[in-house]
Length: 364
Image (cartoon, rainbow, N blue to C red; front, side, top):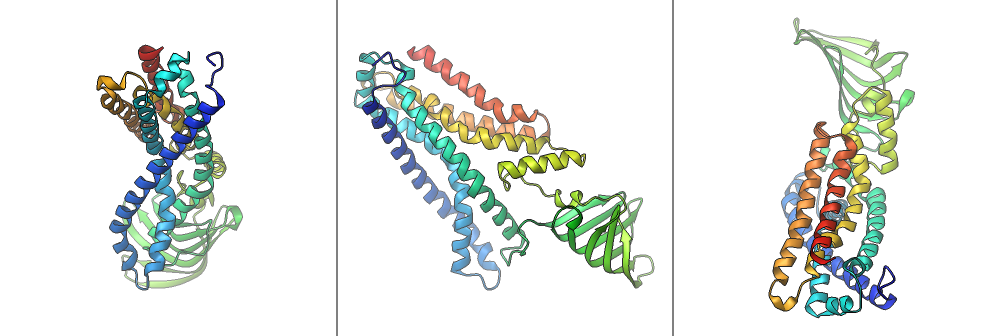
């Protein structure tokens, strides 16, 4: 049995099943508590919009729960690992496996493979469900929990600078030459002083600028309002500046975010923060593989020595230190202080080495 990387199939399935069931139980318990607290804190805002009731609360719950599950999954895998390994240690099952010639890595192998399966499921869940739920919830919150604009692929409340002038569109629909702006307001400025405000219900791209449909102008100095009809403005302002202004890494799938980054790069816009978010869509789910390694200290050492609880605390400390480092790396990536790959993958490989060093030093 010691010549194989895995224990026997019976032991492997036994450990993997115990690990997955305990992790799932922890995930459900934590999600129930956190969702209840979140709903209590946000229900007042949801119900503040006239006409909202229990149906809207259930809608909020259905949109928020995927985010909570994605957030709690790595914590649940960590706690599930520690509970599983501590139970095996307490029952002297780890001692029996080591007495049969298994190394510490062989003991952990079934848990790591099961965690890899969880990582694949987590990536698919985040990519197909969490990103859509996050985007929909963000738009609903921007509408103050009122009716969401019908255009799903559009953007709301977009600001674009045109030299000294500011262009604001309440909603943006379409892409490229099919881009349509609704409720457009242009603030004409000179040297920081507001000269005039131009408003139009619609705007469409034309040539190298935009045509305002049914525009009107308010002159600040004279206080007079005049109708302009259809007028061309914004020479040099591209449609991509509106459609790509509110790109959120959390609200897009991996493929759509990859495409948005390419479009932003072609438009000459900074993409470092989005690239960090892109690679973290892979590194985040893969963090579940680290949890059996970081929580492995709870598996070894004699349970009757009285140090099992201390070992479990050390495992939790290593796991939570990873989460702190991961969030810190993402924050530095968003600020541009870290390169995108380092921000996304640096904490993963750092704690992979730390976990291996601890395991080899103490058990191998």
